[in-house]
Length: 76
Picture 1 (spheres, rainbow, N blue to C red):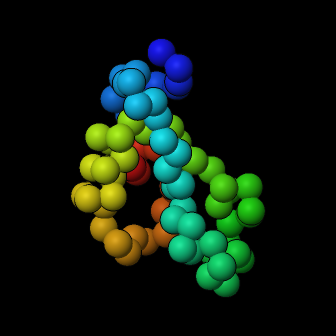
Picture 2: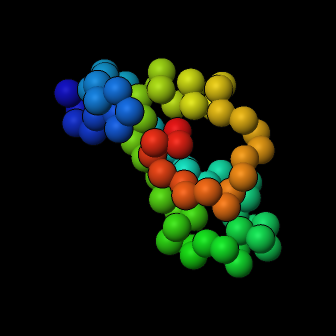
């Protein structure tokens, strides 16, 4: 398989490989609250997800969240 990364949620390796999902959405990176509360490194953190899990994360996670909580892969 060309892409040996496995999904960090379901642990599958697929023919499509994994995609990167930002734990803090890129649309929030220019927001002053995020810039004050998170470092650039924290905002750049991604997790490798298969296509199915990545789609599910975007489909089922709320658009707004209490960002004061710890952001981890378990949130996704």
